[in-house]
Amino acid sequence: MECERSRPRHLGKGTAEYFQVRGRVVETATEGAVEHIEQLAQKYLGKPYPWYGGRDEERVLFVIEPESISGTG
Image (tube, rainbow, N blue to C red; front, side, top):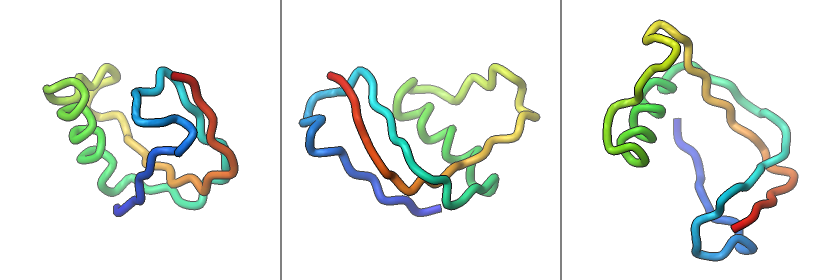
């Protein structure tokens, strides 16, 4: 699943402590969700995803059409 990523201009270049995206879910998918969480875990944890709920849990990706974005940091 391809997605476009961009940092909201008002958050600057620093790391946001919190941000939220409010909008409408335009797509859901399970295909590619496991690979996605594994990529995020490698990026942010430096190791495989810990699977707290067990490997048999179903992962779901949500694509959101943003209506508003806000945050702190």
